[in-house]
Image (cartoon, rainbow, N blue to C red):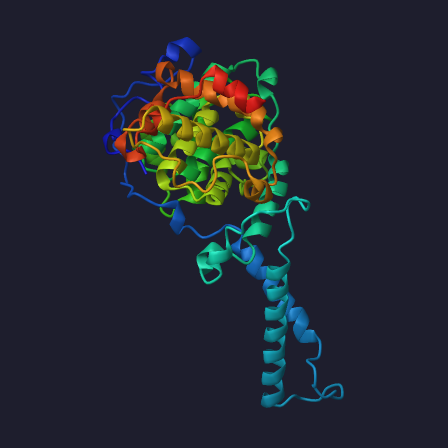
Length: 410
């Protein structure tokens, strides 16, 4: 949710040095107030996007089982009608068979990777909680890691003659402010930046259209993630009339065609929430890890890093920052590592993330540098956002020193 003091009016990109990057906006004198006010929304109330496919596979299994004979059923001649009692026995047998198959899958719990031992089952206590999907959550995230390979982003700025990384940083800075101003949930921001990168990975665009692209990407993300998506006039307002309705709708269509209408992208934020469960992280710690991850959204060098890998690296850096900050500042309670079940990348994290430390530790110095320069950054909306009490002031947690980084890498 957005910080209370974030409801300020500001011309979308006009007051943060448009002239330095060449983005153009119109005057704000004709801007209108957003037509609908948003209420604070929690992403925990959303249903899994893959719930339908999971239930679908179970239904098809039941249907296939119904074609067979339950033990003890008598063989009928073709065309003979079953009695109600026989139909009932057959249905019960099918349900029992499907239940037994689920119990077997639950007991097997195949390892990822297979040779890792000594891990703790973080879903063991959730068997009776239907909202956690404990029976197949491992399969869901295994599928996510496979599916993210379909949304690979390359170093696309080499093919964009009109853009540079500073323009992208400015745009993402504006998108973060829009997310706060209109109180969108976190998934909207992550998905909209991903759609932005996926489009630029395949299409060349003029710098004058970059803000339009960002607005359209966020408009699509809102329709996908929000329960009450905003209307077009809201996005025209926050852009200070930098584009009109027809232009926004046209760009929305272009984005959807470019990504072939496939916008169910596994997000780094989704992976982070799952992986943080491995160490029993509380909301303060999760917010610190999310602050690091959000800084990565704005930095172009992380645009073409896999989302699951970014989630691992940000979680690991947050663990080390929390330990060090607590040691250096025992009187402050911004974030604590005492409640964490681990402060090292242990077997449980390897099992549930599918990643060893050596596969992502090279990203940690770059992430740490983002935390270090954030207070002095020209585009510091994310830093200001996470300096607020609503986000536990986690932006005040110090980054690691060079010596501490060298120790981690070794």
